[in-house]
Length: 280
Image (cartoon, rainbow, N blue to C red; front, side, top):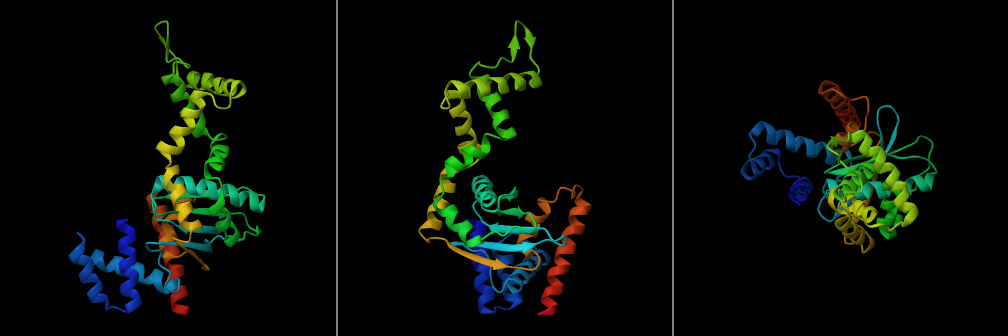
């Protein structure tokens, strides 16, 4: 909420054409930053504002950005300031729907400030239809369908089964290795599903993932806001990722391992944005 409030303030300042000096002074007075940092923050938001035509994701608005990275890979970035746990649930559900729509696998990158879908080249994804489908989808059913096939489900089931003494950590004084426990848990998971899909340990595993790791309750609340138009959904197309989406794009690149590589990639994206602005 604090980030949403800050972005809302910055958008108002930029809409009014407030002087750089005054905005920087306001940032210094309200936040524990020095002048250099405040100036960097101002320029960061101003570049995004100019590049997207005044589209800064603020409170009560969900900005959806269609873009592509320097390698031509397509992304749909959801600038959703709802926190990591909510975004984790929303991103998985959105990816399932998008995958069903285009008939292909979709990659996901998640952070506190939003999530991004990596769409295969040549796929035709209708963003407006995607958003409409998300608004009326059964989130819990979608997520349960997705979670069952993941390593997360297998690991969490092992923990729940161990707490229920269905998988033993020790036997007759001997410690059972984690790998052996995992193998036993996988066999047990299949057996439990055959006996009863609502087996208590299975249900506890789903509850732990959906409510403790993710935040399904608040994800459903965001879904309700979208459905009832309490949150305005704005779609924007950009030739290269906007400044506020750079971090999500970099997080999704498997070949960016070292911080030096990350810095170089961020600088590359920033230079592309600046060239676009100079050409306007």
